[in-house]
Image (cartoon, rainbow, N blue to C red; front, side):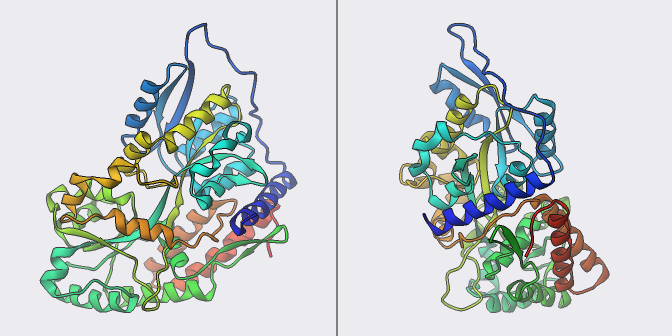
Length: 441
């Protein structure tokens, strides 16, 4: 058994034991499979927030006459689609297949909201990258099929860097020096936004800095949100804030969109899927952008991270057609035609092992043109290989996200140190896990 497999086995033990201790199992349960009329396809529903994923669903329906999938668009995140999904499970009328972030799978597991799909997907394991497959495996059971990861890279305005004579920053020290040049070049211009609203972004920076916030050990969780690696990252961004070298604003806000469009924010550290967002947000800047690897803490290293891990598709507890739902989830994320569509629409970096047959990775004229002819997928392929796969997502990730964003925003508003915000988040998570009966070391 691999290190990753052992880690997730221990993780499952901790999560499930915690759930049992506080009796959190929801009332929804799988009933007898509903049989369609003779000659009619099995009808299943799929909930996802990914824009344009209907193209992949349509491809599945066109290739299958025994299963028909209806797409339901939901809002991403714990306060949107996730809450709707869990409520539907409790009410006994869930969708069959749903989109979940890797970070959310433990939350759904401890709420007994996922079907064990092991009998239907055991032959699919070798199709997927091992660490991504393991995000849906707990103990010896499979609960989700990986869709895509979100390896980090840095999108940057190559034209502005060239105009100012700045070499691409390969280290964080060089990033700091570039920030000073960019800030001095225009009173409205910043190297980056400090996105206090994005817990996945802040977590990715900490992960890339060598932090590992949640480690399952001896049927317990070791929580280290405020450790030295995170402190180094927090203190670096604190310096940028104190010297007015980054703009404090929420990304995806109207202000941020305008800054991306007009060149007042000239870099964006984000997942591979951000390409589609950037092209949609600032189409008039086509040809001016490029993508580079994450700056390193030590010159010559190659360490990367992800934006909240990635996304998976899971079958909800109570589905009347778990076998067909699982078949759809595997096809959606492994058939090369479908994966090519998912990559093109910005779903993330593919979870399948063999990416050579994915057409949209081999030839993407619209994408490459936007980045001045650069094949940006080479950057994200290397980033994905450099991700520290020992990172584990804990139960209550929605609590983690809310606590981190609240505490960091409070620190920024009050002018107090960011390291204190991470210490407060550490205390919040230990208290939340303990309250749910989950053992914490």
